[in-house]
Image (cartoon, rainbow, N blue to C red; front, side):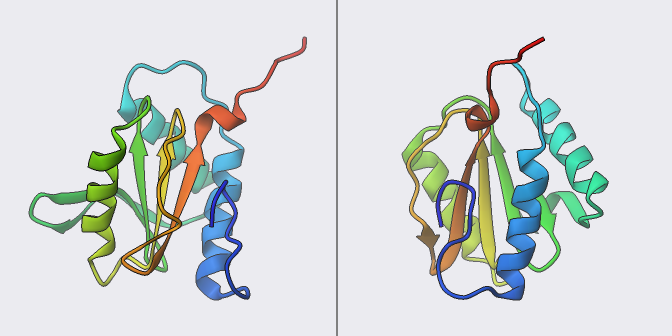
Length: 137
């Protein structure tokens, strides 16, 4: 799974829900934002508009709080800028190690190379910079 689409295997309920979340994210129009929490607010609005249930700042365990927990076990983490690859993969591995997480979506402003599966769970990179285009008036 890369580039915002779930492509491995046949369609499943989890794949359907992941694709629903990705469709909501594709509707985001985010300009230059200096604070990660503003990106999170816009994502929360996008999920709510699509009636996708979620919990913000979901606590998996002490010192393990993922930005969004979405029904069916989808964890969504947001990183502003271009995250440190080693650090973010370590963080995603921690989240994926929890049984209630079945798939992880990493939303970043600038792409970073991450594995398509972590702890044998789908891991999807969603780069906001791919949504940036030229606005014609």
